[in-house]
Length: 108
Length: 118
Image (cartoon, rainbow over all chains, first blue to last red; front, side, top):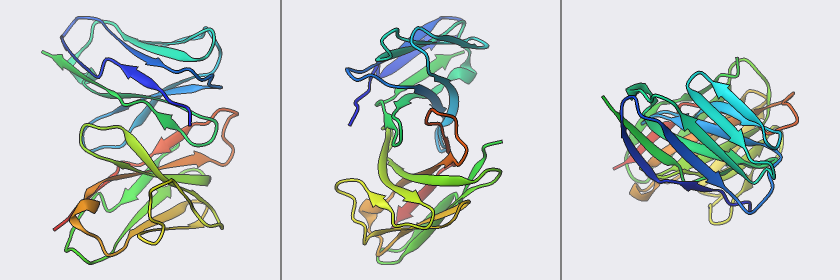
């Protein structure tokens, strides 16, 4: 089983601040996915990163895949209350292994 | 595209009864569907992998006779919790992997089913 470690576990910031969530592993992944999940709902796919060193932007969200394809980060610029949720990284060629998740709370 | 539905969205049942949860891929064919369980404030835990037309593969520690999975078609998988007990109360989520998926493993998740066993 390929393990993914996410940090921090919890993050509470004020609206307008920036935040970064990290996803690390000792294993190499062919791709990593980032999901956001809101309470009582299923995870929603945000992005898939596949190339080492890749940077993808989705509005105020920036995703980076490490050169060695063992780690990834999610950076949110000028966070808004709508960004509140559980952020999950996941990887695996068939069955997905999930990180423990980062609960992000953006206060208005 | 890539929409997955689950039904019901929530269910309350008495201890000892069985509950069936349906997972459907609405706009694509899914060769593989996955069933997860999620406890409050925790990440997703894979229960089993379901392939169309074959028996499901269960993760270690998951009782196959308690959690019956049927993948009847390329768009439908069902999870039946048999003889449910209060400890089975949880949020159950399915995901589907598209038949013509890209080379990387993208899964699309249903909205989840909240099961409460009294």
